[in-house]
Image (cartoon, rainbow, N blue to C red; front, side, top):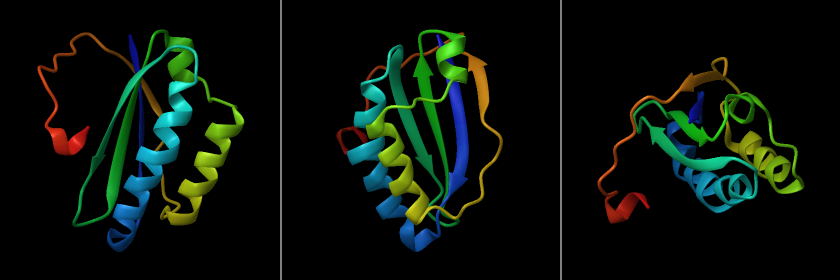
Length: 107
């Protein structure tokens, strides 16, 4: 399994809106992509900085960019609330993944 790490953000006052776009549009679009395993969205509430880690079956899938209409629409929504600053995308091999349970408020 491989992970794609994307870092960027939104102004702190737009963080809730960004999280809603991720939850309501981006994740459903990614679920339609071949090889998608799951995702974690992280945030710093003080700065608005965020990090999204998506998990994929293969390195090629993690390194690729989905092109479905749903994904592109989700990206368009993200662009409207994003700060426009983003770190280079990284691809990592996952060698340990252990999650016993996720608290209800983050599912």
